Length: 111
Picture 1 (cartoon, one colour):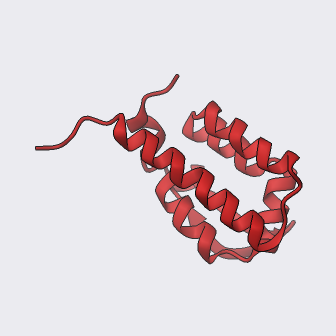
Picture 2 (tube, rainbow, N blue to C red; picture 1 turned 135 degrees about the vertical axis):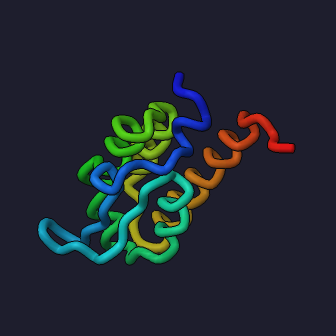
Picture 3 (cartoon, rainbow, N blue to C red; picture 1 turned 135 degrees about the horizontal axis):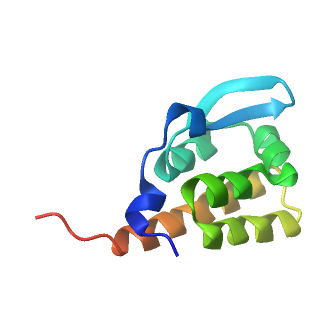
């Protein structure tokens, strides 16, 4: 399992998650860290979230770029529940918020 600091790190621009509403339609927002991703979920139209969730984009980015297979599995479970709209937005936000909090508890406290 990857360390919390690695999962929470800011990634390079080319590794960032770019939000689209459909293929070729960039919505003008991206996330370079899990915390930034969390913030963007509340700003992004739920149609964009549905587009990415049902293509497996979120779990792929979380697993392959951030290195958090556990969170990727939780996101996959959301997809399997066939969530849409505001309910999807809320559940995705809560799932990622919970994981961010778990990871932060694992980080050494700064003095």
